[in-house]
Image 1 (cartoon, rainbow over the protein chains, first blue to last red):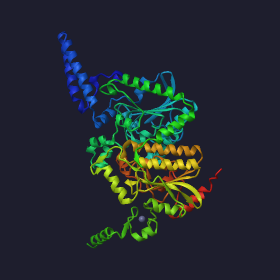
Image 2: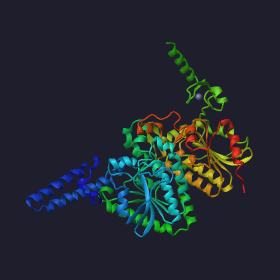
Image 3: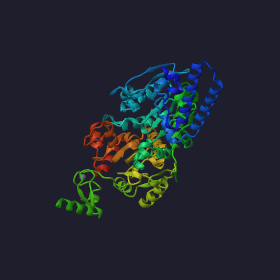
Image 4: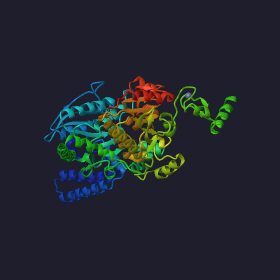
Length: 326
Length: 276
Ligand SMILES: [Zn+2]
């Protein structure tokens, strides 16, 4: 499988990465030329590669919010299954909400991360159309949120930290989801997560889409990957309501302040986990190593707090979020 | 052509502010009749929106309501500007027009002599949306109930999160639910009354986790918007979809109660809570 060490040439380039695509083409051409001719173009190659790195860094340093959204949604961005294989040395998936069914869009189970035994829960986007249809593109249904809550209570019983990985465009908007109480399922999670007696560490890895993201997003520590986004509504949805035209999504993305640096500044999140230049999809291992470091660091710190203090601090943390005048 | 002239006349009259068109059965009702009937349609019993202070008048014993945190108001934390202008400007206009500072009014009072902490949402203020100020006021009202061990009651009426406050608005869902969780820890009653409409982020937070969830007849209650769902599943939805009656049938509310009977019903329910 190429997915773990994807070569740059395998990755579809986004619009704003065009200069990189051209440089990459030149690099590839020179390489095959060198191979054909048996000549050494080392100097030129080094030059082109340097140019690539510099361009890449420049582009990624100046990303607009809508470009960040594109990276967060990139089809090659590492997904829950990649985290399972690169973050954990063991994973025991646990199925079902004990009530209706087993949502494939939101999954979880026992996991070993470093020396830590944890409960890992996350949105489960698919790698291809077949997987995505089965998983509703990582849009969870009520049974998904209820399974997540069941697993969280299990983690509480076993005294293990809860690690959630958030990556969804939102909770599933469907007739069956409404009939089974999508609103109640999310609301229940928000309420219960506020006082679950074990540390909870949440990381937005891709798209943090509204209530569907928050449904597994209440924790002691909230991290975001550098190019992930977290928003109350999608830029397209916001644009179609407030601009009456979805094509104003870039404007809406800017207005919504949905990037990690903005949210850190507003006190919504606690930490930004850096991504390699070119985004998480350019280097799965480096990205997921950084996520592991953050999880272990926070879990170790939080495990030293007495439970009552942990819950009080969690309440205080959320009590303080928001800006208003008096 | 008579049909056209008739509708034209009705349109004119509606414009003249004499008639109200019922959202549910589409009947034209004399505005005065509508008001005398507590904003409830005399034809079909649809319970329309009612402003927060009128609601408080119907629920709380006369002379006992004390408002708290009235001065909390939005601050435009994102410098949000959309196609129709700046949020900041709209806040000023809305506050002036409605003489209201946020989408919720909070305070304490008595229901048939039972002291309660109360939060009543007002749909007129940015569609009752959940801003930072809204979340803060609900948190503080819940905390008051927590400290004094008195029942907490929320009347919801909201389109959901307030987009103009971005992710801060989303986080108010977690903030208000954390306050409810603490009430549960201390066994303080929390009753949620869902009124028309209670949708999106408000339905997916404090409104749906009452010890009892009570609704008014025909109230629209749901997570996702009807149009979004129709686009997703590509089929028409049943007529009663996301109505209070639909939620009762599916097990998400305890009772549907008429507005005129709400106060007595709440007092009766609270009588089952024994203060220790
Ligand atoms: Zn009617």
